[in-house]
Length: 195
Image 1: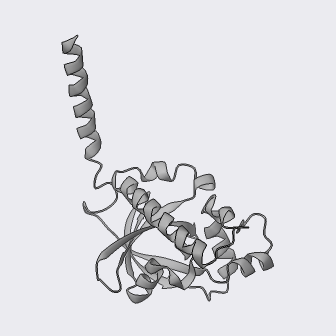
Image 2 (image 1 turned 90 degrees about the vertical axis):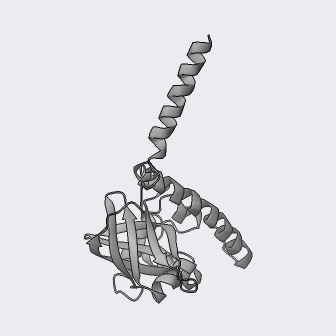
Image 3 (image 1 turned 180 degrees about the vertical axis):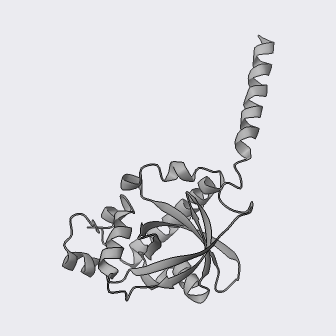
């Protein structure tokens, strides 16, 4: 099991910040389906758009999630110290980007839900390799072990309120692909003429 002490947690947080920026870029480039191509291995991702509690600025955070009975659940593996978690507690109005669309929603901590272990196990299972990497393998742990290892995790339910549209979301940079194709065609044509 990977032990996450304060020093390791800081390293993981820095690594996640870089990884998160890359994931958001992929979503904006219209590659969400590719990111979620093999969820049992790489995880199932969505992006939560939330409001910074100190700055009031729009923040984007990719997280693993599970849909259970049509409802969206995710968790904060770093517990109450995760910035995005504290932001949604402060301002529960969020936007979620899923591969099948995006929604205006409301986030709520449901860590006291009686079905917490079952729901959290499904969310961790949907994280692909991430759960086992951090020593929380939902397929191998019994309920007692799972609850002990995830005691600091926070479970979040996101209620979908309305479908969201507009250009400022997933795929907003997808225009770059035709531009790249045109540039490559022009370069190829110029190279052919020089021969």
